[in-house]
Length: 422
Image (cartoon, rainbow, N blue to C red; front, side, top):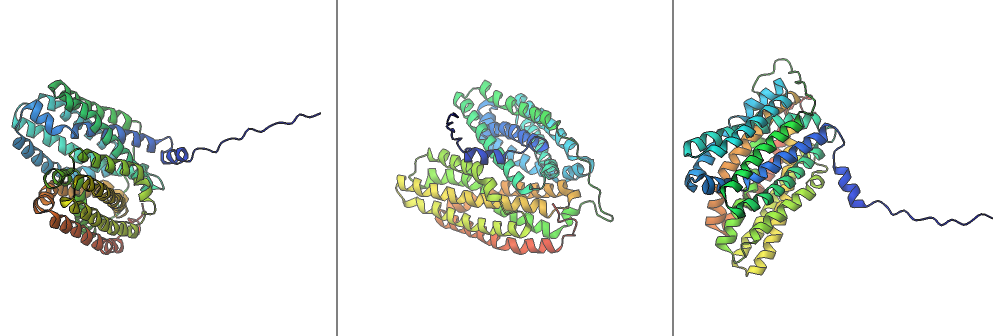
């Protein structure tokens, strides 16, 4: 007589695990590049969160000299992106990117021996030159290994970089709390080691042969590409939003609101968590130039709403200011997600494959100039002028967003058929 068997129900797979697993690249170059990105940004996050304190508390330089030196370095660093990007296009991006990582490791280690202002300026300028060069030479690697769904992979890399930078900043907090030269030196050496480790990981990538240049193509085509330059200008203006939460908001909280100072850290945490969790999802469907232009337009509107909410907190009691600013930071971050997705799509979509490094160098130049100008602009409008300045800056973002689709259509019309393919 057969016995009755009782089936044991098998629970369905965890949906969140499946989603997370789907976002992780398969084995191969895509995962190698993602791992290298995490290691690189982990070290950079450690140093960026403590750089000013290292130079003032450990090296002993006055704050004014540190600000001047870092400003000079930021401007000098902008010179490297376009020529090194062109070199990566013609000599192979993997090899050039490796070279920039080694130089960054050496210059970062050299900071441990800096004791005078001019030596500080010289070393930090070399560091910034290598940083800009690395960004330009990395662009062709992302394009070459990104696969068919390049937009999603770029978004994934940004989530990885954001998460790594946050982890690095948390690690830096422990050294800052100790406030000793040994602790600060450990951060500098740790960042140098991260570049070496990143280089070791990149060696596992196969070489990408240069893409043949079409006949009668000029050398510096990116600089002669007027629509792309116009897109870069709009993207650079919109890119000043990156300084809103890390520069303008902390000063606003301290000088103009009754919100507690600890909310500065909470605001950064909210922004970081949302970017790490939602960048891939926010980038879905933004895989054409028109879609990227529309994303830029939406981002401008989101920035206006977010900045209006922040501006309204100057007359609110502390608890209400915290609540409203939290919503403002969240809305601003949504705009950041759309802006990033649209910006990255245009950087790759409008660039011909054989000159991706050079075009990335132009984008790096625009972003760098925006980062240099942003503190002064935001300080004048948002901090010094107050609520009207926040609204004016938000209005500028809206105007840029409205102009973006028009300029993008111009860029699309001027693309050769072979150049628009990604």
